[in-house]
Image 1 (tube, rainbow, N blue to C red):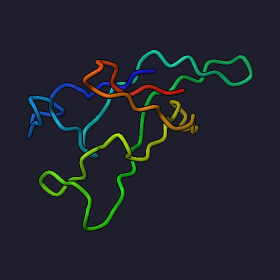
Image 2: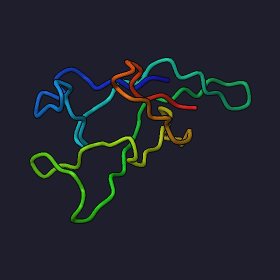
Image 3: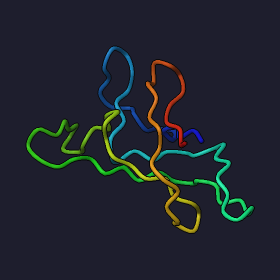
Length: 98
């Protein structure tokens, strides 16, 4: 599964030319082969849970998504599919599930 920021996401501040994803960004999920009992249950969304607190990195008050940000993948029926595996954007792979 690969989650890619939706069009228009990341139009804000950049680090080394790369846009910063925030908890407010939407992601398009594709290529999730997850199944339950031989029935396809692909991941369709990722919900991020940024850590709270004063040390959270924010852009305009919204938490920035880091490689350590907790998340959960969900099917279209909102059934939890497990946590995603986060790969570096510089590797060109985005976010993937196990």
